[in-house]
Amino acid sequence: MWTEKLQVQGPYNFDLVLERLSLDPLQVVDFTNRTVKVPLYIEKEPVVLHVQAIGNIEEPTFIIKGQSEEYKSKAIERLKKVFHWHKPLEGVSQHFRDSDLRGIFEEHRGTAIVLDFDYYSCLVKCIIHQQLNLSFAHILTERFVKTFGYQIDGVWFYPTPETTSQLQVEQLRAIQFSGRKAEYVIGLSQQITHGHLNLDLLAELSDQEVMDILIKIRGIGRWTAENFLLFGLGRPNLFPKADIGIQNAIKLLYGLPQKPTQEEMETYSEKWAPYLSYASLYLWRSIEKRSEKK
Image 1 (tube, rainbow, N blue to C red):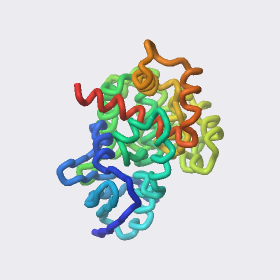
Image 2: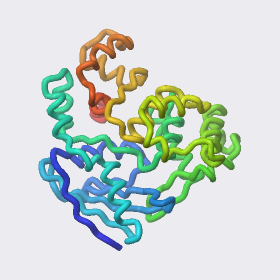
Image 3: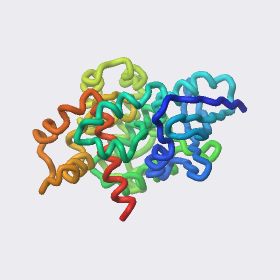
């Protein structure tokens, strides 16, 4: 086993990061010890890393532990991107200081965009979540992973594309997938296993190029592609205007009598670029916190 101590530039609030991660029942989060277990694929090998925060918002420091020295360097580099340790958040905070989102950014100061742990699980999760309320989406995702995935060191890994591509629609319907959603997830997995889609190569393309490739795949529309760009690839300037959560957050923020139109959302968000992804995250977070208090 190896251990590495890593200090990153503040502000960075790992406790708020853990709060948001804990919304997903598959995450292994320990608030008392400020830890999370992270399942990664490094060179296609499953690796579990143990991440613990020991610093504070202004001087964030982490202890990272893993099993295999062979994958240590690449694992740490992946963690830096997953938890957004590779770029300071101060510039983002300053950008919103004089904006309409100032209050939300102050309340959730130091909350980073945390990426899904691998591209495939991100895209599958996006497909499962589309057009479902968040609670049932998490339940359905958990059933999928615990039925067809596998566990290492108490952490669940999503089934691989190879495993999912061999499933039958009836097997997913048995855990309450709709027929179409089952076809979408299996079809995506077959696209990958047959070599028609290479998710790793998408990271090298522009937002629009990624969008153009993904929306050609059955079951993937603009909302799913945008969420993959944001939470899979970590692109900084995504604003999914069709997302109901963002619409509700804007309605609440501006005291609107009804959900904003696409044109209104475009107007509100003009000044939030080039950090629209962070505007999206903090708007989501603003209504998540209200739900937690009920």
